[in-house]
Length: 347
Image (cartoon, rainbow, N blue to C red; front, side):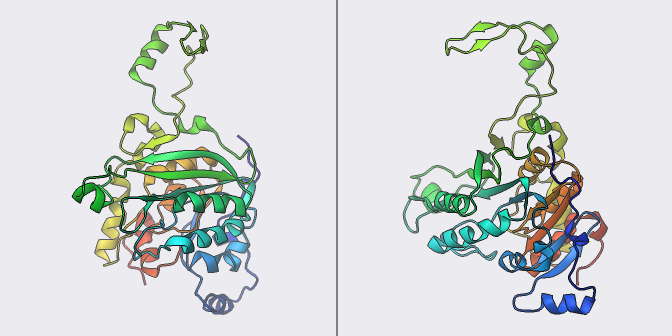
């Protein structure tokens, strides 16, 4: 692996144009507010819309310094949700408008990972192509490369869309989301050795016996006599991430599986009467890409931070982080992901 900018500083260390605290406050209150919600030793949560944050000093100072943007923007759902999703053609134009300013923040070998869920046409059991159209427009707008399409499978997800799956019984349960890995260059920083899956029982036996059937397979593939005898520490993962199968989860990331990672966050929100974000990013999904595409000390940005799963994951993995969240209440609740704030009531 190589890095263009391993010394990227967290946003809390970004230079300000003015050293006057009141001046910072005044600028934050001009138009739509962009202000610091809180900070840790590794990163900063910004309260404000990403559209406004991208033109504010706190993010413009990071141009060319962000190693990874990993995020799950509000999905293009049929109905408006409380966390502020756009619908229809407005969603496409909105996501497209963010492409270039977000890409400008990346290092030359940086990546953007975007999770986008499926959408359905209103009133009929027909899927919408809007998520795919929006992704293509986002890619073209910033002249990005599509490194890989990854499927995030969550078999435990509740059946949806309910009208067609539960009531009419004419469609199957929607249990996956699209994850798109984009980059500025054709060869962004990445190392699949950082996210190897545990070997299967059969592979462990093979490594122990040092015997297997080599030769040409019916498919035409030639299996060498020694190609599978070396222990590489694990199996190369597939481009389908199963959030419920710990057998295909890198051992170093097991602590982020299931609901355990959310426990402190949910408890914090309950104790201080704050709303828990209804569409939290899966911790395992965020952890996988942070470990796969960055090195310790790198800088990770989530422009739709929500409960700040990505920030907390990044910090746990030794990366700096920046989160941007439009809702003041969600930003306050996200403090519950960090031990230093667990007993501190947000203002």
